[in-house]
Length: 133
Image (cartoon, rainbow, N blue to C red; front, side, top):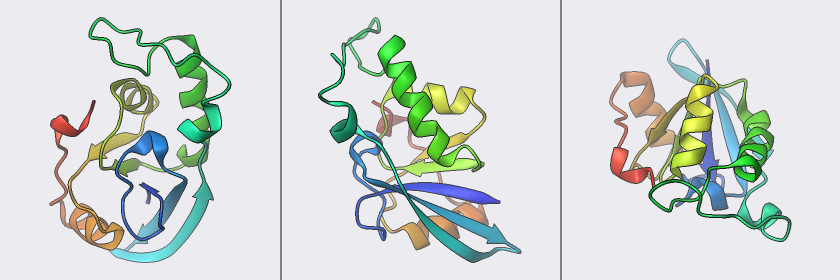
């Protein structure tokens, strides 16, 4: 199985998915990490000059509408081979897009990627709905 992690420093989970620079993809076999791969991720820094980034849902949250959907599709291509995406915070629009595309999104307060992998394997990595904004 493959699990994706949003990161800036390649060791810890980034504070917010949208602003993160990289995706670490960890391959797990037999309950052990057998490979870690770093993939560059487009984010707010990539798209900021190219779109209006409107607040389009009923509660004023960003991440909805045609422009957002195009962003999410481009980002999703980076980790679409993974069964789960582990983040700290993530926008509602991105979270909905990735889950509807078949990837389980887990927003957690665990910072260290290796600790999050251990908890994921053991079934102890909990999703915090309060981390979906």
